[in-house]
Length: 322
Figure (cartoon, rainbow, N blue to C red):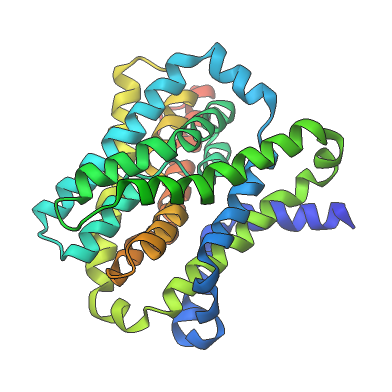
């Protein structure tokens, strides 16, 4: 039974982008099916983060200590490229306050767990991806509120302490609890490890569907604008992240992991922070919801290109894309 669930879990994780799109379309046309989900935003993200914590091994921290340079480069890129590009896009495109805040929230969040799956598909360094996600998530209670306070304050009042407490409750506590359970109940966690991604997939899909269901009219009025901003933001992360890694002379599999990690944000956290801390700015949830859909699509395309290029290089053929 567990093996069957594990197979389903693996399949759903691989095609999470498609699943999010399908459920988003369902929520758009039948919103009453999912409107309830936003009442449990913090719980859904907390469950997803707990699932992430259960997958973190002691060896992940060992990897961070043995390859600190690459992890540091990835995390620095994560917390500079995405926040600053979000701020620049909001200013250049003169976004309304709510949307500007939403884009900033996405940019200031840590890497998302989906980046690990996309890195695997791309043939990148999965251990480095997991290491970067782990570190960026653990320092998120400090970095995310500070960055939102510094950048988002140009549009709305930001309560630094309230944001710190929110990130601690819905990210740090669940992740640390998951790590502790893995540490002291390792054998049990190992037995159910195959179904853990399913927990995160269900939580994130319901979270996104709930946001779509509750914002149908707003999506019709400004969805195209948000999509354009999200595409630009994500593309900046991918290509500047890749450029930074190349400038540091990092090998192919690692530069692939860094580019994907930088561009794929924990947009579920952005949605939760917008819902909990900025209720007076309802449109602030939309960039996170659309980013959740788009970064899985773009990440899959990028992964396919990188994997094919890697294969062409190893077989001595000229890569199709340079």
